[in-house]
Length: 155
Image 1 (spheres, one colour):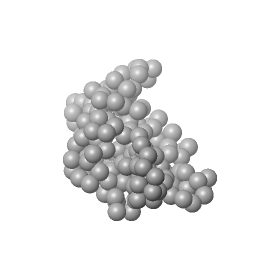
Image 2 (image 1 turned 180 degrees about the vertical axis):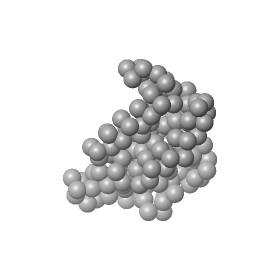
Image 3 (image 1 turned 90 degrees about the vertical axis):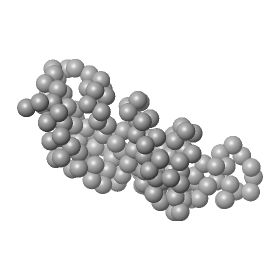
């Protein structure tokens, strides 16, 4: 089969399974075997390369996000779609600071919520570049800008 056909099959079967609920399980330790499976599919099945080859250039060539980039993309998209659930720092604090326009993390016990969607989403979203951050209230424009950013810089 051609690379294009194999890539299409990968997007039909592997990608939906991998990305389902990724914002909930993407930062846990058992995501590592999923990433290994994804790289094996890319390297061995689609690209027919040697298993010792680096996978990052192959991901870029096929224009596919690795698992961790997909997690960051999905989590930041979740934050943009649910902006009404988050507060900005200047809405919480009366002092004007440099981080006034950053999203305010939840005030609950951080050890219990650090791996949660809200806390992780805020941390990831606050570290995105400003040219992506400015589309906080525009979901489609945010997806285009972040897709372009993630295709250039793979995590």
